[in-house]
Length: 131
Image (cartoon, rainbow, N blue to C red; front, side, top):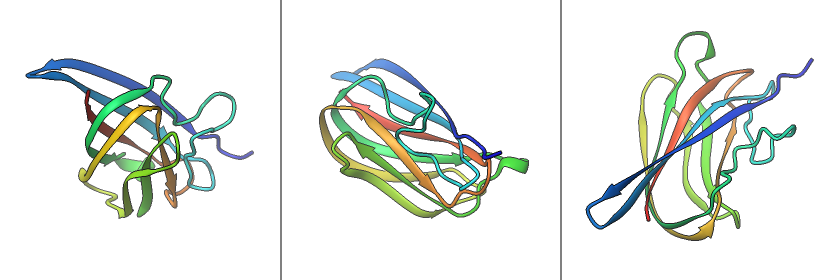
């Protein structure tokens, strides 16, 4: 039986000096094909429910440890029109990695796409938006 992806999205907003700072966190687990996609079937996709307007300054990744550590995978953060905000090929399988995004977004959802992670591997991805 094929492995289904899982992806739990949480958001934390804090009032910052001159606006809101929002952290979006994707806690993901890949399919048997090593992928996580925007529309993952059975309502388990990687697309945010909320739309954002602001500046995406940083995205980062943290791989799982132990038996669910992903292989050297590729992760891309996208907006709703498919514009890549940050991409990392050969993402680290052992450490936190930061990826500068530096893109403005207007009234858009965000999602991640992952390939090459391995069967049922996982990690956490974050994006930080100044709204």
